[in-house]
Image 1 (cartoon, rainbow, N blue to C red):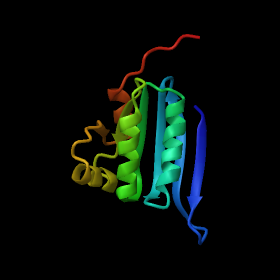
Image 2 (cartoon, rainbow, N blue to C red; image 1 turned 90 degrees about the vertical axis):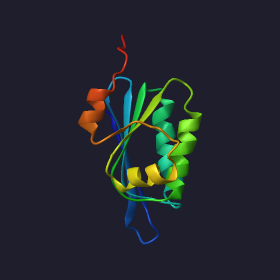
Image 3 (cartoon, one colour; image 1 turned 180 degrees about the horizontal axis):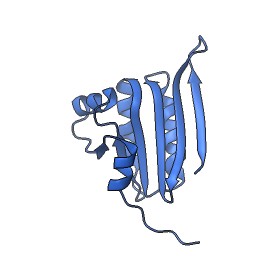
Length: 133
């Protein structure tokens, strides 16, 4: 399992967003965001999502359970990612009761990304094809 942790501080030096990428199993990437996703941090969040997607996972699970603020820039980021995800990768959200999930239900009801309450539930409900070396 490879972990990559990226922090995006505000000008005052306080970390507004931390993004961690890891692969809990072959063909599955998890992008965990902690903090705020707004106009200042959304470009970096999107960069990390695209980095995870560039590894061509079967599933990209986006964990928003620890996101404390999710603005319109975050909605736009996920919309752009979903509309460009045509290579067979499947997107799913984690955080069914998080502020981010509530915003997505209100602002983007047409975006029908699967949403799970937590990572273990998401992993148990998604399957990835076997890979052989």
